Length: 224
Ligand code: AMP
Image (cartoon, rainbow, N blue to C red):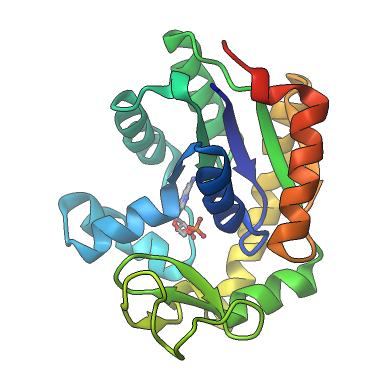
């Protein structure tokens, strides 16, 4: 299988959760820009130092830097085997950068999937989100609890609230996303690559909707 998708949608729409399931159930590799940046910050690298003020305040890292980092990261992978990008692109400028990069490699996208969710649900998901400090796995205080309170099922790491999931920062992140979403969605709409998926409900429901789209578009047979 060789499927290349980008997952779009506001913070809390479930991009990371869906990317995790696609990786587990369909064997698609996934790259999350947010995860990548948080890792660099944790490891106190030069890139981490550059992006920390954006990430902790919920602002977007400048397009030029994000595209450069992603191009470098994607160059190391064999995209032909299938990949899902989670949280990238976030702006039309980034979408143009990604488009140019993929075209030059002869591996264009199959689709851009926009996860649609009502704002109250986004806020409820973000405010209850708990993240493993060690491996980055996501949980939710009400809907996706770990087996032992405060401890990651996968690696035993400590769960905590992301700094940018505090109420004030969440409101700002949603505002920024709204402003950037229109031109970003237009970019993919014009190229007939945009697919909207209802992101409400549990992950099993969202995945079922995704499977229907997959069958309809014949993406599992994608070879190019
Ligand atoms: P996320 O985990 O996707 O919610 O991203 C967390 C934070 O990382 C965002 O609030 C931004 O500060 C930064 N970030 C992640 N992806 C991007 C992107 N594509 N463009 C700019 N900033 C990003």
